[in-house]
Image (cartoon, rainbow, N blue to C red):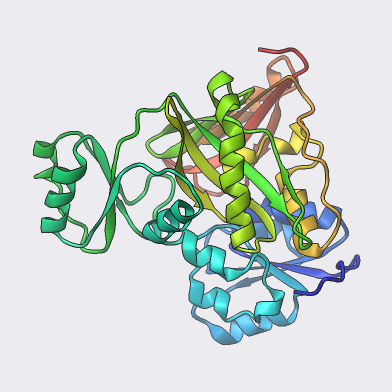
Length: 359
């Protein structure tokens, strides 16, 4: 990855075809760049914002090479892009470094990595069999959550265990998992930062987040007194993580705010759903700052421009009536992602409401 800033007309490659790629592409276009996307065939909503789009499998090395040959820098929009596909791209084109992807794709590696940097995690144990699972529940206790070590997101690959008796009826999924004890927390919050090629780090304000079924539903600012009291410690962990990875771009760490301090939950080496509010409510959105960082441009300001911010996801069939939101007072900002099929549990868009008045 060159230290020279990309000039207008250069090409940014994005691995993945979802809404995060779409919003990154829109930010890149605004800064004068071409955008080329790559993802397997499907409902690739990012394609509508790209100058060119490769619909090829992750294992198609010739197609990946053709894609990379068009690009001056390559990034990704979600952490489950197979590492083998990323490693098929010349390393000097990649931002962030693929090491971040390799760590974030495995919950065990992720927790061990941040623990070495001083983060506190919920108690957890690796699980490779039914016997391991039974021992993990006995040692960690219940309630807890059994999670696949890889490939889980938005609550997928997770099973909540409310009691030891309930655990007896759960069938081990046949691949490495992690069993975590439940954390007694007041709220969940995100630390979203951007790190430049020169090592400059800037943070956005942290939102308080609400999840349902493992999926983010609602993010609000201000996040409350407890989060405010813990955000500096959490930012310290996030900054150490970014530095250890020599990270370039937007990085997100999620935490539980507890009476004993922030507890690390998970890391996302990418722009994040809980930062969608930055499009309207921040001096520079997470999407624009990610593009600025990987292109070698100066970072934009991250200050929040409003006294209160409310971002809510639009899920499933709610998208069919989402335009009714535009009749509300307060000038709500509606974003629909252009997905063809509205399914239960599928993120179809989001709406951000802002106000100069404190809540």
